[in-house]
Image (cartoon, rainbow, N blue to C red):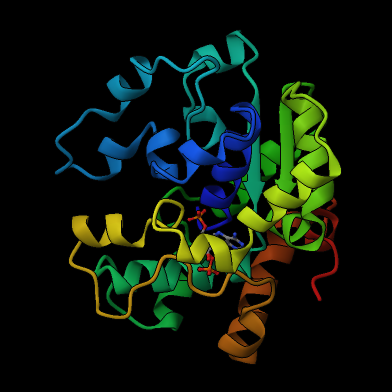
Length: 257
Ligand code: A3P
């Protein structure tokens, strides 16, 4: 969650739909790729999101989920369905999710309180690290495409090329890749009412005036948004969690500049 899911949804949907920009510019990303557990986390939703996914006519179906591996539908594993997993470094996820929840009045408290909730697994889709690590450890499986927000920011063209091979899509021309990169830029997606779900979310929640789903979209927002104590606390938690697996945060996310 808050790791670039919507960004990836737009990219993968376009690859799976022969770069149909016309349709992409007429219907919401989040509608073209439904969120399977949506009605579980939003109990006032008047549609059953599982039925929505069940009744989709698209072939292949393209479905969003933030669920940890063990809670995904069993058939995904039995039938070896393709999984695209997007991870983002935890400090930027903390910031992005804090503002998302705060501006929607779904969380009351300050950043220190939120960090404590985050590292003690009292957040949506917890635990952050076990969710990421389960998929990181499956990253070499033929049906798993594990990618990070940081890689998408650093070299989106490379991600497009690798994802397109993973999804068995046609080889794209240079011009098509350029069109995709432009369509997927932060500024363009922010301005596009069908890519940026701000108004849809506003209609569903009592959002604060300054809520915007597309907030900064950068790597390393923690540098100017968290105190050195908050950064150290999160880094200590990460080190303690990852040492059991012989990993460092940079093994997964690279050196964040
Ligand atoms: P910020 O809150 O840091 O701005 P998700 O879709 O998983 O909820 O992730 C939302 C995060 O992805 C937000 O991060 C949002 O701005 C960022 N995002 C969405 N589209 C993006 C794009 N085209 N480029 C960069 N970041 C993007």
